[in-house]
Length: 185
Image (cartoon, rainbow, N blue to C red; front, top):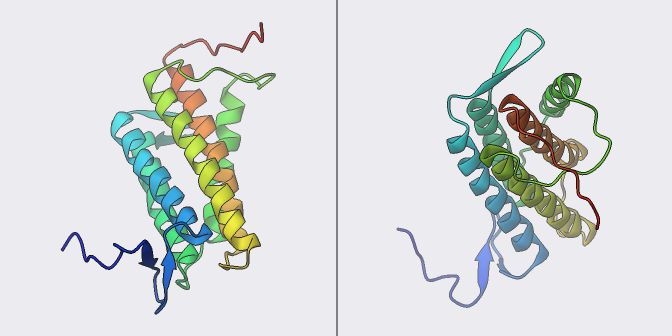
């Protein structure tokens, strides 16, 4: 069944919780922001299907990497909802290794860039901003004491936006697109 009518009064229930919470609560906001980011990752995955790049000797498939990130965000969502699941340090390290590898390929960052050098890059940039918002929502719920989230999960959320930025840049670089700086005029 796709609807239960239980949320018609503006409340929802989280994993393993017998109480209903307001859909406007910081916990519901965090879960919604994570869901929104994960949905947009699906668009990024569909757009990048069949595309890959090399980091050192390893060939990385965009869609496979993004699917792995989507799976990891379900772990984050479960943790935020109260499940005893968490992101491992290995997952954080893998993201860091990929970002570091991409940084070795690309010209160094000396300024901001305007999104939209390529369609894939634009979708990845939008997704990056959604992940940043989700991270802020998770931080807010954690600071209010409404949820407990591991340090590794927080590190993963923080690194994830860096990964998406790196993927946006490498996808544009592979197409030979110019990264345009803002002119601030």
